[in-house]
Amino acid sequence: MPRFEIRRRALATCALGVLSAAVALVTPAPAAAAASTLGAGAAQNGRYFGTAIASGRLNDPVYTTIANREFNSVTAENEMKIDATEPQRDRFDFTAADRVYNWAVQNGKQVRGHTLAWHSQQPDWMRSLSGGALRQAMINHINGVMAHYRGKIVQWDVVNEAFADGGSGARRDSNLQRTGNDWIEVAFRTARAADPAAKLCYNDYNVENWTWAKTQAMYAMVRDFKQRGVPIDCVGFQAHFNSGSPYDSNFRTTLRNFAALGVDVAITELDIQGAPPATYANVTNDCLAVPRCLGITVWGVRDTDSWRPEHTPLLFDGNGNKKAAYTSVLNALNATSPPTPGSRTIRGVGSGRCLDVPGAATTDGTQLQLWDCHNGTNQQWTSTSAGELRVYGDKCLDAAGTANGAKVQIYNCWGGDNQKWRLNSDGSIVGVQSGLCLDAAGAANGALIQLYSCWNSGNQRWTRA
Ligand code: G3I
Image (cartoon, rainbow, N blue to C red; front, side, top):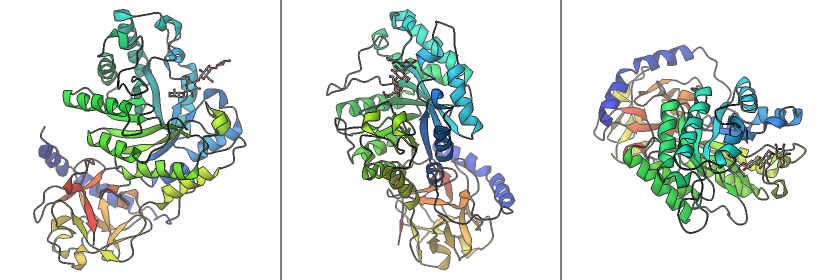
């Protein structure tokens, strides 16, 4: 279906959004306060903040208290891997995986699935297979695990760590790779059929630095998959930074370039040797700067929970105290979208025209449009510390829905997330509730304003003047 056709259909459904905004009016407006946990801080930016959870630690109350308080997304550290879920061929065992899954869901958290096809942590029976038998075993495994969690996992790491380290840009040699170069796309096609609701991710490490051969190889694969219609929705950057694989500020370029291919990106296993606060803040800001960055997961709660405790790479020390890195991450999550004092116009980069309330109307539900900039009061927007964009003092830029094509209108300010916006450094303006971009459905006078998936084109970039 052509893009404009999708938009027209979506516009026709916007009346529903008006209804929900009206219902929401009865909800009291929350006070605008800085978030006090990582999960809440990420949520106010339309992201999640997650952690790896180890089932064996779920009876440690210090661990569960921190994990429950701070994080709103969970990845099983080992329990959903191949050796754990299919220890014997065709005999699936979800005991440990379900412990983690149930703890997460009972505590209101979303779950990332990790991982379905990987050269490591294979059970003995799989390690001894090759060729067509191994290929079939991989397919059976994906089907078995995804069937158990069908509709319940937001993102699945379908394939993990398939590229070689070093400068070759080659695939990693493994029993799966030796079944044929197409094993990765077969895994993704199998996964899409097994659970169409899950976002399907490719996940790897040492792929954060844009100049590295491994990064470029992964980029070429994702571009090829998108061109050929292989179903891939997201790329996970593990982000295990250490002295041999240090953080580089070009990580943001990497995230942006992958997002521009039409996939979401996520930071999936973050830990940083020594936990320098500035580097943790940089990584956080990198994700916040890229509208398609879904969220951040750290690979464990306390340093003592880490797979490499000697590097003390996490946000809490062994006693469960917040480290300096914790504060720098939380500050970064709270520091976004600083209010710009005074009223300003919001000008479309592609059109050169301004965000405008048609006819200077004040009626709730009036959809916004582009119009020649003239500095009238119906083009003057004030950003507030709550993340609102206000016009006439008490009317807010309001999303009447959360889907592509949802109309963007004026509505009485009431403090809802559909009235909060993140002004990104790349010029995009992202709805906190939907994660979608403020989008002009055209460039002429009268072009309507809607929500749409972020793709960083001129009709989604804005300047304030
Ligand atoms: O549970 C057994 C225990 O019974 C036994 O006594 C002990 C003896 O070694 O081993 C325990 O299992 C260990 C398991 O972690 C649970 O602690 C395994 O040996 C050990 O190999 C395993 O390590 C995991 C590693 O993946 C395996 O590849 C780490 O916990 C886990 O953090 C790590 O996670 C990976 C991601 O999946 C992919 N990206 C890299 C990341 C870090 O290596």
